[in-house]
Image 1: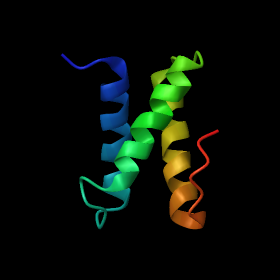
Image 2: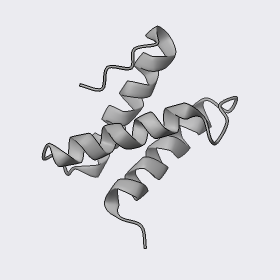
Image 3: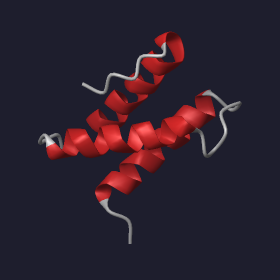
Length: 71
């Protein structure tokens, strides 16, 4: 059974890859997304939809600016 972080990451990653089909399923950004969502949950964020939206925003920043700041 997956925990909430895994399911949230999978959902966010599926949306991201749907929007960006050229991205490999094992792209390094998946690891960044996973750590980001884990960090946000650890900081008290538990709304899955909000976590997905924030994760997608992180991936967009990375794509546009190469910004890996996870704060």
